[in-house]
Image (cartoon, rainbow over the protein chains, first blue to last red):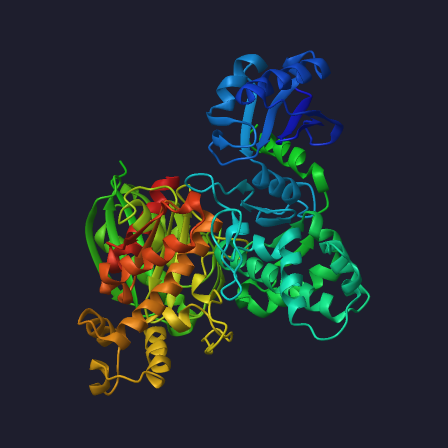
Length: 310
Length: 310
C-alpha cells in the first residue's frame, strides 16, 4: 500500500526533506547539512539514511522527487558545481537503495517553479513561469504541467537575459548587462549606486553606510524620490523579463519569488504596469503574482514531479 | 490498412494539401483557393471534397494534421481572422466527415516550426525554435518533440518582442518597437530609412527609388557601407531574439526561415555572431541554421502532428 511521496531539495548548504501523502499533503519537513566531501558521494547515503529512519517500510513510498542545483535533462544530472557532482545518473544510483521506486530529478529553480505552479501561487495552473529574485536570479517554466528543460537543461535561465545596453555591469556568468545585474538583491543596489551619482536632491538613503535592497524599498515606501527611481528601474527590467517569458511561453501567470519579492505588492504592481505596457495583446491577461511557498517550493515541486508521472 | 497521412496548411489565400505515407514520405502536394465566404464555412466541405477525391477509401488514412492562421490550444481554434472562424472545434466538425480518424490542429507558425524540426533543417531534433522573417514575423517553439502552445495559444510570438527603445516605430499590433518593426522585410527597410538620414557618404542605394530588403542585401554583399550598417543592425535584433529563445526554451537549434532568410549565410553568420555574444554559456552551442522546407514546412509539420500522436 503506497502512502507517501518524498520531495527532496538538495542545495549546496542543506538538504531539505518533505514527506507528503500520495494526495500531496505535507506531513513533515526537516533538513540536514549537505556533506560535500569526496565530490558529494556521501549525499546519496545520507538521503537513504534519512528516508529509512522516517519511513522504515520503503514499500509504502510511491516515489521520490529531487531538486538539484544544476542542469538536468530527463533525470540525468550534467553537473552540480556546488556539490561536486558531474554526469550523475542519480536515479540509477538510488533505485537499488530505494526498492526501485519511481524517482524523478529536476533542476532546483525549475522544480521550485513547478511547486508554485501546482501547489502554491499558481494554484494548479498548467502553464506558469517563475522568477526567483534573490542574491542571484533563478527561473523555471512549467508547460502544460511539466517542466521545460531544454536540450541541455538550461531552459528558464532568465537571470542571464541581456537587458542593459548602456551602463552594463559585469555579471557573475562572464557576460555584461544580465537581468541579474539589475534585478537581484545586489542588482538593485547597483542601480542605486548609479542613480545616486547624478541625483541632485537629498535622499533618506544618504544617511546609510551600506545601502541594501531592503533599505531602498523602505525609503521608496516613505516616498523617497531616489529610492523610487531605483525601484521603478528595477521594476522595468523585471517587467521586461516577464514580457520575454510571455512572448515565448505564454504562461497564464508569472510567479515572483525570492528575497526581493518580500517588497510585496509595492513592487509587483509596478512590475505588472511595465509588463502590461510591453505585452502583446493575447498575453496581456497573464497575471503577475507573488510566490506563496517560500523555501518550501522546492520540496513541493520535487514531490509534484513524482505525482505527475507516478 | 493505414497507408496515408494528410498534412493540410490552411491559409487566408490558399489551402495547401500534402499527402504523405505513414512513414512520412511526401507523395503528392497541391493547393486550392481558400473560399472565405460565409465566415469560412465552405473551407471544411472543400477539404473533405479534396480528400475524398484523392483517397476515396478513407479507411486508408491514419490521420489529418492542420495548420491554421490563428491561436490554437489543444486542437481548439480560438479565432482565425483571415478566414472568419471563431471558437471552432475543427476536430469535432471534421471527425464525422472523415470516419473519426486522428485529427490534430495547430497554429500555422508553430506547425511550420515542427515541420522544420522533425523533417527539415532541424533533422529530427527534439528541441527547436523557428523564426520566420517575412512581411511579418512568425515563430514557433518545439519542446521535446511537441509544439509549445501556451495558455491561450500565443506562445512563440517573438515578432512582438519589444527590442527597440530609442527610435521605436509603431507595429501593426498596436505596440511600438517590436522585432517585426526592425527585422521583417519592411522592418529592415525601416532601419535603412533611419540610418540613411544621417549617413554622410554615398551609397549604391541612393540610386534606387523604392529600396527593398533585397536591394539592401545585394548592396551589402557588394561592400556598400550603409547597406552593411543596416544588415548589421537587423542581425543584432535577430540575434537578440535568438538569445531570448535561448534563455527561455534552450533549443539545440534555431531555424531561420521566410523571405528575409534568402540572404542566406551572409545574414545568418552575422546573426550567429550576435547570438554568441549574448548567449549564456550553456546555451552557446545552440546552432543558428537556415530553413529548408520553404512553403512546404506547414504541410510537413501538420502531418508530423499526426505521426507524433498516431
